[in-house]
Image 1 (tube, rainbow, N blue to C red):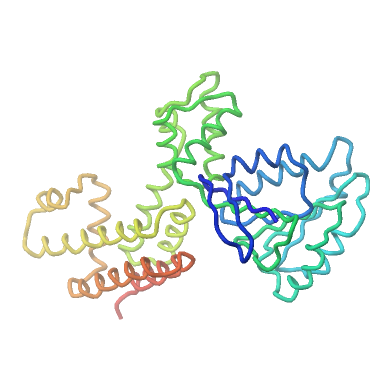
Image 2: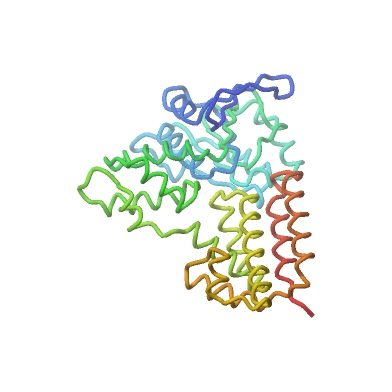
Length: 352
């Protein structure tokens, strides 16, 4: 059994009684391009874009010009099919090509019984089929010798900047370091979104060789900041559905839940400070200086949001924020969204 991971360093660990050797995503691609294809691959982890890139490479290696690709490529969904469907697809002989490619998406949703039924095939797969299992987690019970497991962790921001440089080169362009960082700050570290923006940038600069910060400013909308503003505004006006949508967008852009919680806390603190200062009769201009809020649109929005909150709610709100902070630091990362979702619902609960 081979184990590969999209991390940025060599790591060693135990996988039951087998040593796991984790290599970088770049190293895995290099191995994939030069080594003989294996009969079974298990692609695990959250970064779907990188998985799709690997599938394209495998597909390119598997089929040659003239092959009847459509007749020999089958996509099966684990949440709507059984093991027998996968096994039959793999055992069926190719037609108009030397090999077949069978891709199983949502493999983790296949029932435990079906995974057990699939085990004999995985331990002795057919040589004329390449089987790719796509899942969010490593399925320990179905890994066998000859099966290569690739764990696609979300890339760190430093790795993302390297990846952006590589993508830009495909368009025969280069990107300044500060422009690359600005792009990540606007779009986030999700590779699908970045890929789309890179394509737009390369078309925008035309014959110019380098992408500058001014190009990023001109072309790329500030998705991350827009979603943050939308989340704060929705919470301030206690609009739960809009707040949940903005939260989901931020999390999909790889924004850290702890950072989101910090921004929510700071925003609600400003709302209660505003109400307190208004009650004290402080002039509006002085209030904005105290709160360090200079943008007129933000001032107008905060005044409107303050109408939805009462001073007596202050203790309950910040107790809730403290409880959420403790939960985020003690819970499994898989539960982060649920923790934040509960927070949103409770913050947006209207009086009466």
